[in-house]
Each structure stands twice: as C-alpha cells, then as structure tokens.
Image (tube, rainbow, N blue to C red):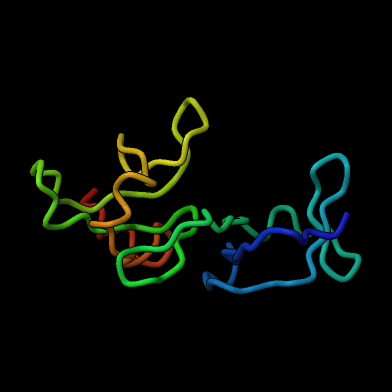
Length: 117
C-alpha cells in the first residue's frame, strides 16, 4: 500500500537528517519500503498532526513546541506525540487546546536539548 492520503516526514536514522519522502510503501505486515528496498530500520515516520502552530507552521509528531504567554503559567517546551489514550498531546496537555500558544522550535531528533533533558 502506498503511503498517501496523509502527510508525513521521515527521520533518516543513519544520515541523521529530516526528509520529505513521497514514495514510501507500507506492507500489510508493517514493513516500510522505498524503491523496492526494505527501509523499516532506516526511517522513523513522523505524521502531520493536522494542526498548525500560532505562526501557521505545520506540527508533526516529534516536534518540540514552546508554549508561551499562556494564561495558566504553562510556559515551557514540550514534545508533540500521543499519550496513553492515543490523544495528540504536548506534554500532558491536549495539543489542539494549546496550539494558540504553541510555536514549533525544533524536533526531538535534531534538537533534543530544547527539552532540557
């Protein structure tokens, strides 16, 4: 099955670069292929959340967002991902409710230091 119908980007684990691939294929057993080669172990797939930050920039899984000027003193940097209930979140907050204060400032692969870990 060709991976179309949703936007994504890929993190190349070997080259350590973010890429926009448009021709990846996903097999029924969950294996990832590019030009007939199995690249499951080479790439991390990061789906577009369908949301944009306060500046109009698309937010992807693995992005780091900075929440600022929030009325409830939540200002900090958070990783975008899914919580244990498969709800899109940044930290322990719903991303959809925080996006008005969120700004994409990096991602967990290229700039993990932004999380302060």
